[in-house]
Length: 197
Image (tube, rainbow, N blue to C red; front, side, top):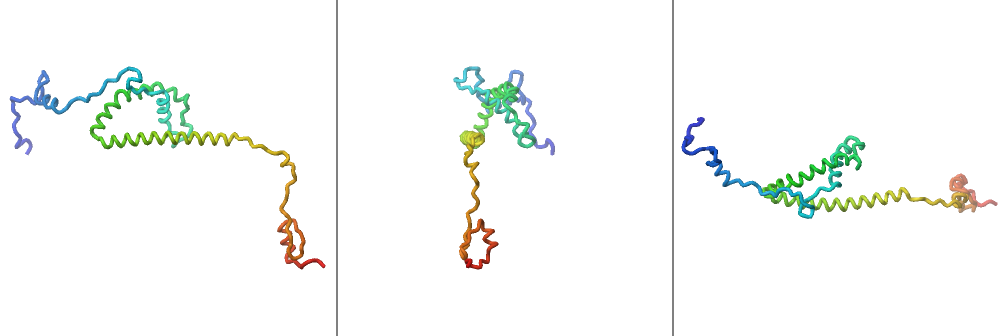
């Protein structure tokens, strides 16, 4: 039952590494696992292949944190640029740490294990970015057009305002030849008795 049929542990083979770090476990680990080769973050200039998080990106991330609250709770949750600048330095440091330390390691492991999904994610991210730029340009143009419509000046011709208003055209009775100012007066006249004698 428990423990029956198991081979006895041999005393001459240590199951754990000794003080020198050698042994069966250490040898097996050395054969099967190698630490990922990730470049250490450099403090070099942006031109040396290092992605530097811009101020606008950090401000955008701070504002994005409040979008769900502004959408689902109340529009007063919307963060202005001045309010976002209060938390921008801390967000910029955090994003820079993610870009320098965590993202390369995660992406290296993910790309090796899930190549097709990684390729799809890259393709969808690039498509999303391209569409976002097009939609942002369209929204900006629509806002510009809407603002121009709101501020458009309407010219009023004073002579047209003082001219007497013309009423409906007079209506002619076909039987008697009488002229009436509108259709209601013609309807009161009907049935027509014919031309006057």
